Amino acid sequence: MTEPVLLWLRQDLRLNDQPALVAAVAEGAVIPVYILDDETPGDWRIGGAQRWWLHHSLSALDAALRDKGSRLILRRGAATDVLRTLCTETGAVAIHAMRHYEPWWVKAQDALGDALTLHDGNQLRPPESVRTGSGGMFKIYSSFWKALNQMLPPDEPVAAPDRIPAPAKWPKSDDLADWALLPAKPDWSAAFGETWQPGEAAAARTLDDFTDNVDDYETGRNLPSIDGSSSLSPYLHHGEISPRQVWAALDGRGDGLTTFRKELAWRDFTSGVVLAMPDYADANGRPRYDRMPWRTGPDADADLKAWQRGRTGYPIVDAGMRQLWQIGWMHNRVRMITASFLIKHLLIDWRAGERWFWDCLIDADYGNNAVNWQWVAGTGVDSNMFGRIMAPLTQSEKFDAGDYIRRWVPELAGLPDAAIHDPDAAGCRPDAYPAKRIGHREARERALAAAKGV
Image (cartoon, rainbow, N blue to C red; front, side, top):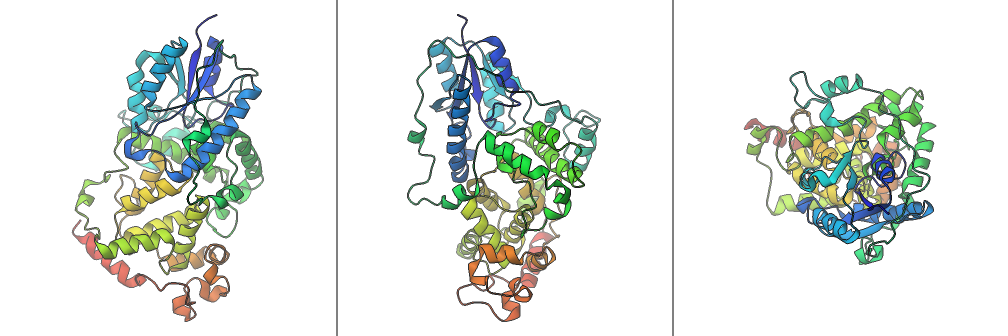
């Protein structure tokens, strides 16, 4: 019998449209392995919310593999060391994996050398293949989209193998429960399970549901009070569905399709940004913002904590932050509002918010998270101007967020639409709800004054 091959799984936890799996099966017996690696990413190891999702996703993947005559091997440690150990234990001489663009995975992929064969399929097109006229990586999304659009549609998704050949002997595997990925003391994840079902099968059902609603996506995605988004972001992030599958399933459907496809392409763009600038999650894309006088000290710390807990006195901001804590996800429009509030109203470094989102979001993606925060902050290579300060009270009313606020800020549930966006101004703020941390005009003037030196 020929030596088995390893299938190294990371954020590609699916069997359909899995080119690395197809290639591995073509060589013979396959050993699928997931490695919980908290060492290689360093400070960017996955956060608490993603760990909850990962537990359930790995359980679902193992069940799907067993249906095909295989199983999932779990190991823990530095991925390159674990893979080399597995090669020694099993006699495997080849490793197949999907390509990833986070800087720590790029280094790990390079370190494995010729033993590793990488496959594309987690993006619409490999980001490194979308180049400027001079051969560089795009730093402006609109230009990137124009170039990428000339390379679309993406390749057709590939079907999962009917059977996955098993090795003569399986290596030892960790027990998933021993990884303690689920929160226990306290268990803050009760609403997670009520809201989400991780796994490839659930991803397919979510996509099916969205195909009926894509007509309304252009408008619906901006209205927090309705279910107008796709809800696909955590499935795409964990690789339980591929962007090629999403593209193919939605082809020809709905007026909102172009807008949604641009959102898919944004994922490709952010992968390209961090490939070109690996430290983008830590360093300002525009170095002059290194001089920005962010607030620090006890008052700033208290403001940061109030923002994290949804106690700022701005209902739309507080609703978003409480939604984030309770279900590990936040409406996209509200993500922008809450980020802008932290950066410009509270004048707190965008990296503090980025880190909080990293720990709390089930779909926290290194590229997306960094690029989105720097876009709002005005510090990025392609970003809003710092002087564009979102007015949360106006945004709340404009996008009809009353019912959204009622759901996530129960202290305000009894207020009418005329008062719920700004209870202080309406003179009916309940005692249980905090006053504003700072007035909008005062915050705007402070932020613009701070930016003058930059």
